[in-house]
Length: 152
Image (cartoon, rainbow, N blue to C red; front, side, top):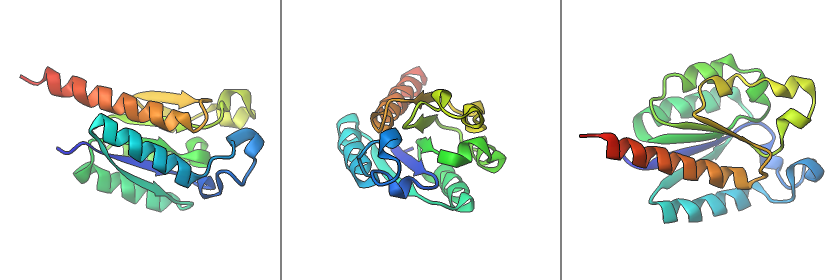
């Protein structure tokens, strides 16, 4: 399979850099995509970078990733705390899944402390700012390399 990684972003991340910069910083989603594309190239990965405010669209992308991708990095945003449907979709994906949150959700409101997605994630990165996406890509690359070297 290819070394394609889907990077999926949930609701309101299209406003990154404009919405609550004291929490999420001033980088835009386009900045994050640019940085991820540069790192992916270094790691021998390719990326498909997507954002939606619609739960069903994220689920459809996870289903698409089942056929096309080796890994998923996902920032489900508010769907983290509400979407069993995204969890169910991720449970159908065989490759590594890395959950990313720009802010440290554990230092925020109580309702943000629970993640449905974490039940499937191979790693959870929270509070590293937008750099968390790069950590996620590095982890996916490492897990793919491990899986490759483990095959006889």
